[in-house]
Length: 310
Ligand code: AMP
Ligand code: MG
Image (cartoon, rainbow, N blue to C red; front, side, top):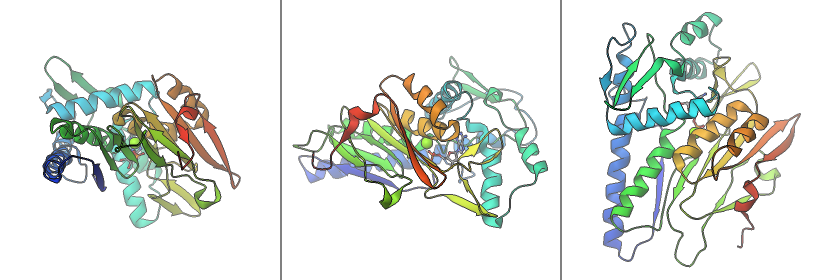
């Protein structure tokens, strides 16, 4: 998935901790081999390749994991009014090319990519667990949701070993189990656009909540003085140019992962509106406006904020 996972495990014996972590790592590897878009042999890549010669003539059966992640992604597209859309693959490819060449794609290339974009081209059959892709040259990209899903799945594996006090995270996406011994929750410092200039914000996660942060602090390209994020605005087909950082907290890491990516595209006002509709979810958004940091918080966000010593 082009990222690094971390696990924190508390257990009564080292042996049990090792066994649980080993199985959880095996699950991460398994999901990588299904969901990676860097690996041309992943199940996801092979599915996309079935549109190389045109729309798929018939549905194909897929693994439970791939089915579930596509299902959650389509739900995310509907909730975010298309801001989150895993069919952005062709745009993401153009972005990766731009980053290498340091030049924007031509309008022609963007319009070409647009023909293979649109979540309405994905058809699922919940009874048969099949997928059919209805446009040519589609490239599904689950990079905005797979890390959260994988964190959640790794935590489930550890629970099979009776390990509940654990945390699994990949870059910006963190899922949690029960807190460390003697602690009320997991204290997490938010990464913000302001860097050291803004006072740090700490949140506390309990009840197996998750947190995701999206933004352009790590992956971006600057072309002619404009900074393009790795998150694509489907309307333009290009990387976002707004300087925005989004953290989402919710009971499930799959949700926090897609929602933080979606809000980056939607912007603060529509983003807050969306998160208020998702049960028990909260968001904090920072944006760089004329060189100054502006902050938006959804109504539930303050419930999670703590002072560092708490
Ligand atoms: P994240 O780091 O979770 O915000 O996800 C960013 C990744 O999601 C990108 O590297 C792409 O792989 C993918 N992506 C980019 N733009 C979108 C979008 N509009 N909807 C869904 N996924 C996207
Ligand atoms: Mg995401």
